[in-house]
Image (cartoon, rainbow, N blue to C red; front, top):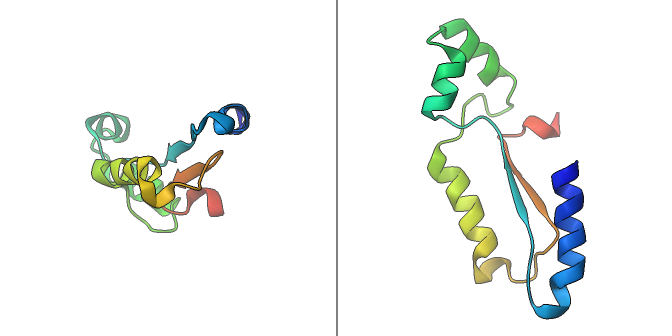
Length: 92
């Protein structure tokens, strides 16, 4: 909740200067760090994937695309938003 509060506060403060402030909150991302956490255990991977409604992990590029969208002109009227790129994890 701290990140969301900081994002909203900074967005309100800097909007007058034309500065947008947003955040990306990723879920589990298929990275070497996640692989170390799972430790090669198929059951652990299955359990973690099952906690996400999309039943899979994000690819790093998917999280990068979310951040790129927030930085693009396509989101020019978006500020103070925390984008949950988490495969629906926070929806349940």
